[in-house]
Amino acid sequence: MDFSADLIRAILDARRIVVFTGAGVSQESGIPTFRDAMTGLWETFDPGKLATPEGFAANPDLVWGWYEWRRSKVIHSQPNAGHRAIAELAGMTKNLTVVTQNVDDLHERAGSQDVIHLHGSLHKPRCSICGAAHAFADAVPIEPPEGRKIQPPACVLCHGMVRPGVVWFGEELPHAAWAKAHSAAEGCDVLLSVGTSSVVYPAAIIPLTAAQAGARVVQVNPLPTAHEEAVHDKLIGKAGEVLPTLVEVLRRELI
Ligand code: OAD
Image 1 (cartoon, protein in one colour):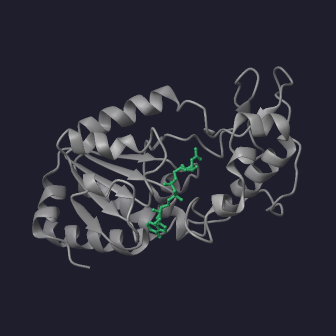
Image 2 (cartoon, helix red, strand yellow):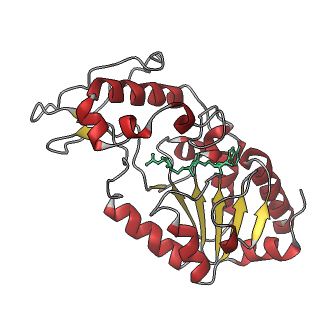
């Protein structure tokens, strides 16, 4: 893949960079996305039953079992070349913030620091009543079969039901994460939007905010997204192929 000389210059000269990621960056680690035809989770599973407070209230064992299936899938997966390239980019540029919609920890395991999680984390469940954090046992969980119901654990403080630590449809994003992400987007010179369909709000506002504030928006995705109008550079391809090549070109410029 060829990158324009002015894109390379813009990245190297940027005082602040935001990398905004979605499920596509973890796809090459074997974690399914949500909306890709045939393979996306929301193609097979009903988000109303599995990703809403009402769904959890109606069938907590089904919901907890589904998130345990997803959590164990992540634990048994490894960061891919795209995650690693993003971590390397942070070391080559001045000030880089990773904002992710993903609920896995693959950016952190690839070496990215202070990752802002807009949609929470599979690894940080909390009590549905008092909000206390719930600690999982350290042992690596066995991957439960898809669709197996598992009773949620009880909160050690109030005995309420523990719920997955992710943001569900109809819920607010974590305030501190949103505030940090929004201000990073407003203050960046370059925003790389990687592996997101840009259809879920308010997260999808992040690249638009950056574009409105004058940043150069670069998209890494094999397919078009919902906000092509905000994109200056379309790098068409998989994150695990495009990003390592980009990092290699930047590295050669720095020598
Ligand atoms: P989607 O499933 O909506 O979009 C995934 C995007 O990744 C698509 O644009 C794909 O073309 C692209 N893609 C697939 N493979 C890729 C690869 N190897 N490299 C780069 N891009 C690739 O996922 P998100 O945009 O992350 O919300 O979805 C946003 C939110 O919707 C998620 O955070 C989740 C879901 O409901 C919550 O969990 C709250």
